[in-house]
Image 1 (tube, rainbow, N blue to C red):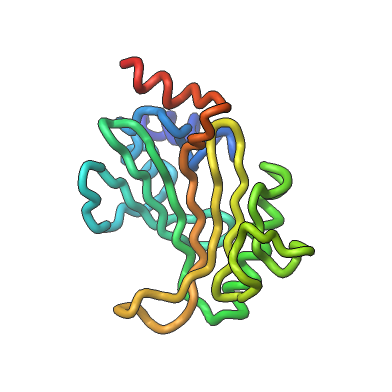
Image 2 (tube, one colour; image 1 turned 90 degrees about the vertical axis):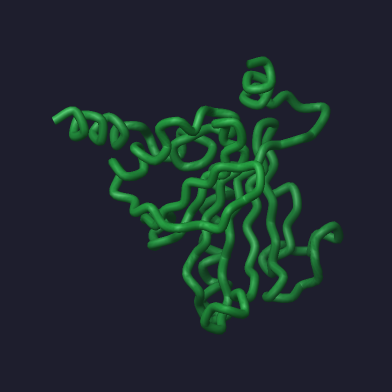
Length: 184
């Protein structure tokens, strides 16, 4: 019964209230596994990352079944990412555009944008090549970056959209979550 109450409490939290899924960048990763499992996510294996603990899952996000991972150092969330399914290039570009629109609703205009709907192309970005789309949204606390990349050589041939949430390291901006963890 306690787990049902815990799951209902998690579901009552508004979507998007944390930087990455359930946690803010800089928050404790202590209950990540239990919280994700309570939401119906399935834990999956992930390659070791030196100096970090990785909690990886398969679950639903952005209207798709995706793999996602929490990268924690000293029990503190340092980054999180989503790996979308491998698709043909046109489907990956369509997913990228959909994510671009959804993330823009939350974070506003991108700080760096190399996508065909960005005119003129941002000269800081990559060339206008659908295989090299990259967009970053920056806030005082976090950066959100999405990109399309070819699948790994050991995977079926295709394209994958990635979405990364990481701390903002702009020296002029405050990142209170990371400051809290440094003060511990």
